[in-house]
Amino acid sequence: MSVNGIGVGYPMAGYTARKTEKSAGSETAEFMEIVEEKAAQDNTVDHDEQAFEMVGPHAPQKVKDAWMEAAKEVYANGMGIQKNGMLSHISQMMVQRCNKMLRGEADYSDILGSTVGSAIRATKQALYDLDHPLGSGYRSIEAQQARVKEREFYVAFLYKLEKL
Image (tube, rainbow, N blue to C red; front, side, top):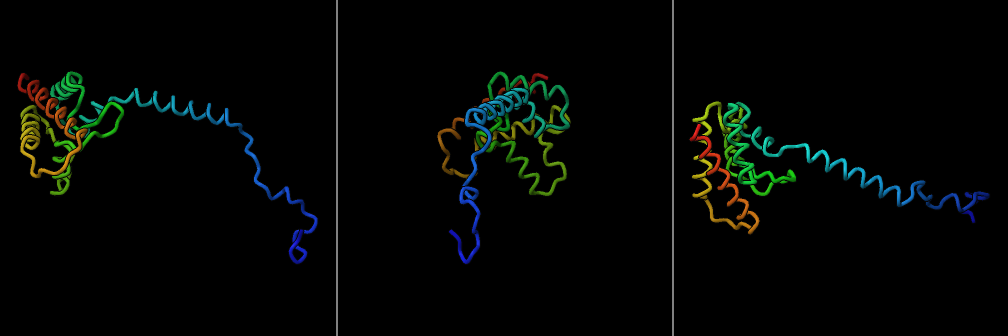
């Protein structure tokens, strides 16, 4: 078939969609390899340490050790980062970071400061803000549970800081 002589002599089969050279089985195997690789990468990332670096880049090693001990003890950290790397909710230390950023402070990620005393002050402020929210806004059950774990972390972290 041709339209005004165009296409005469060309087989119609040439215009049909070609099958890919890979079979469905090999595509599935490649996908599973990628998933396994990603899982291995995720297991090497310490999300508690990553959370600490988000709020305490200049904090002394004693503060970092207290953070890591509290995180292991409570199975939560002060930034709401779960073991899979996802955020469970917006934590109070994250709010402190945002407030510093909005005020135009250059180093808005330095919440814990460079001393044990500054880390204690920041943790007490986070606990106060957690216990005295500004609004009563709707929170899902999951977010409420995450805030309970966040509070447990701050209490454990503060206890460890005050022992230093």
